[in-house]
Length: 399
Ligand SMILES: [Zn+2]
Image 1 (cartoon, rainbow, N blue to C red):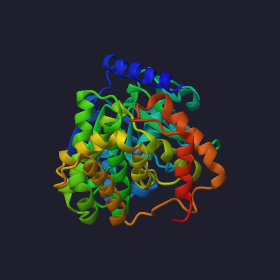
Image 2 (cartoon, rainbow, N blue to C red):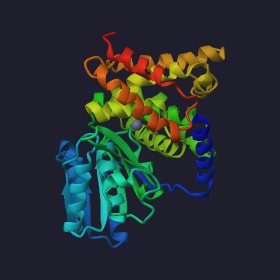
Image 3 (cartoon, protein in one colour):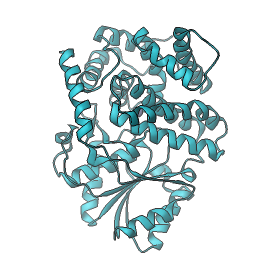
């Protein structure tokens, strides 16, 4: 069946040449609330659903957005009850509020969960079906309300992607609704919103962006644009992530990481992710484990499991960022994996998922991983279910 999956991936690659994935109109700056108000006015929009979460709502830069819209006589309806790994119910509730207040546009200001919830609402407005029926590729196919995505973390890249990732707590599933109509019309990359992000969250989310860039780059099919976006994102993360964690108030590093996250989003929404995300999503679905942290822990293990098949591309990344003086390509490749391990140590991340993964859950988690990866992701090579079981088992054990 794997050859069929490869054939599907080639067809999807061909389809990407025909179905254009739009790019959001992007504005970078510090305090962009007036830009948002101006853009809404340009479209004659007065009533907006503003999706955010209670953790950030009272922060002064977020309040500046709400106040600016009210000062411009906009009718702002807030929805703030978004779970981490947004639940189906979050989207359903926000959708009914959207209708109750006759909203005309959707703003998602927050991390990946908030933006995915906001995009889920847009999918439902366009195609008012039960959300599970929109799971998968190209199930929306209708014009959505205009969307603005304003990230408060530099990692998810949801402001650039075709997907809304939603969790179903009853089935412990985490799945994507993917359609080019879910790329927001506007993305505002505002350093004021990330300036006070705690170092630990900066580190988690930055590692998510790194995983997006690397998985997209290591996959088999690219357009020249998506390949360059992945390389540029990797380069920015290599230069700015660790210093951004160490110097939170330095806006140059914050700006670079917001850009990196956006570019990595552009890359993976075209070239997909791989086994790191395939293994991380069940950790979110089963245990609500933070997505970026799951990716950070898994990334060096999955790269090692891919083996020599990815060495040429890892060595390319090593040379691209001038990581060191090593001349041997295999050693260059291994140095990239060592660099990631070093980042995880610097950020004081756990080495494993001890006391998180329950051994009885592993067979279903591996099944979900393979179901996610095998049809669509053009991974460098397939990993057997036995390999994946061993990988989860080794990380579930006390190391
Ligand atoms: Zn991710």
